[in-house]
Image (cartoon, rainbow, N blue to C red):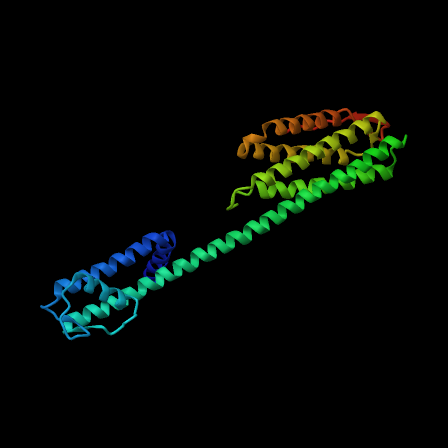
Length: 293
């Protein structure tokens, strides 16, 4: 029982791995082979008779009869006579119908695979575009934050909350992009235009992040807890991984990638200068994060 199931699974697996052209070629060869068999056994085990009542002798007619039998067309213009010829015709139609079923299923499978690939591509592009839009939203919000920080002399909780919320937007979209870009099961190649748009958004994001940190530093801001700085640090790590992936797959963006890495390095360097205020001991602690490339 188990052996029969295993053989069935192996046969199905073999069909799935075999290309359509190979299966089609085998089907045609079987039709021609049966035509040859008809020719060989004609006269000894039976014969083929055409509509005029004459014996079929031409090789083309044998292959023609094999084809219409294998495809169950059965025009009736050629009929088998004799036990051997009829048994051969039965075998011809059984094997021919099985092969035609395999060919048909393979065609359906190819169409289904192309449809699924198209759906996957649309879904993938939609996810990436949504994340690119999310990064664009961060850039728009960060522009407003930068203007606000320049106008106000004091950085209050409201400003810090706005920064944290915008950073959360950036972080979530970068995490999603990282998941899509680094998915080993991804079946399609990332489009060059999508990579260019992604790098452009990331480039602008780290420029804006750099300006925000620079403004905070100018205002001599200290922090009661390192959460905001930890988020910025994590964002630089995710950004580095994404940019490295883009560099590996698309070397043409080398100059832009160098610029992004420069901005990432500047952001990391600047967050090290901030102080964490320990209210219980009334002291300031230097920020330190292990840098990950």
